[in-house]
Image (tube, rainbow, N blue to C red; front, top):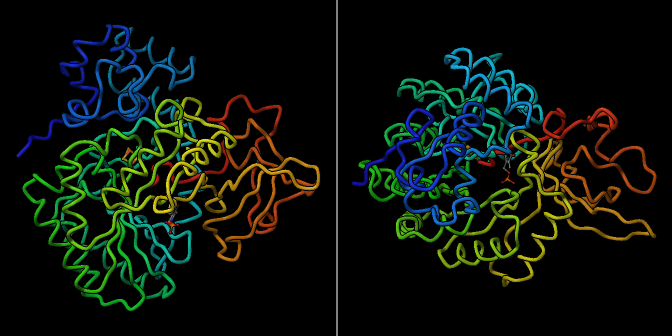
Length: 456
Ligand SMILES: *Cc1c(COP(=O)(O)O)cnc(C)c1O
Ligand code: SF4
């Protein structure tokens, strides 16, 4: 069994590849930025995914190792001087938290607007935004095998709890599902729910099977484990048992869907990941894939065409192409909506129909998942054609609407209705809060509309 070695801020300087390739200055940058943004890597990512001979341009290196430019200069300076002055941990934490507060940690009213109740109890581990699908954040699954630098789910990255919690959460969830017969899907998300030990996952799944909920048809897992630790399905001591859990749910008549995150082609190339995919598919589960488009990681059509093609050959179904949301190091990763569409189109044109199951570019924004269908010219005006793939109100879905063309727009709150209209059709129900134009110093502190960066 391959040993899992975690690298964090405490021990990253021990990574041999870093010692061999990085300058002291670069190591210090990791320390500074890693005190604010999440940082965690492991031996698989370091040894098998990163090309160290070209690490500065390597997508997986940028995806997992904090980079200096991911912080705004004033934030970098503040943290760097504190570290240089020998500040202790609690002091660094205070500074980090202050900076984080300016980085929009809970975009899209995630917290306040989507937390349901049952019998007057708030379901803290549940989000229910789209009618058919309930998101469930099991308390033991709120961390990951490694952390993506673009992710802002760290406010919820907490320690592991024990089995008892799993049982208590499940009871409430089942109650909620009974009370909401339109929900067909439960999506386990995090963090990464597959960080959980099999016995905990199995406790959740068994309870759902035994509840025999007539409305529940699909159990989904939003996971990055195939990218960051495929050994979870091959070598870990409870890997086989995990596959038996999927088989059991499948036999009980449920559809088991993996929403696998793959950000760059390298994640699909190791023998380990290929074996893991095979083993999962053999249980009868389906693997669907998704990722945001991000500068320096996958902002070119070649990478996407290659990923989709490779995924199809491995038996996976390309599913979503997301726009990176307005939180965290968004200034660093941002790709304009127009460019995202051009990248998508370039890749989509290059693959055959079997890979065109993918949809995007899509913004997971406050009112819903907004699809940038493209740039068009309508009645002499240049516009973005948009539609909802998911809506807070299901009636909004699949109705084309139009925004003024803006080559700089990177998020929904940058867009204005076309044809002289005051508001988008859905804004009577759900107004978009647009940052005041003149006082908009930078995107990452504009507390706008967004959601689901982690895209689990
Ligand atoms: C994306 C998402 C879902 C799942 O949507 P599908 O289109 O069914 O995959 C569910 N809830 C939230 C909040 C989401 O962002
Ligand atoms: S994007 Fe997903 S895998 Fe990456 S750190 Fe965030 S929750 Fe974890």
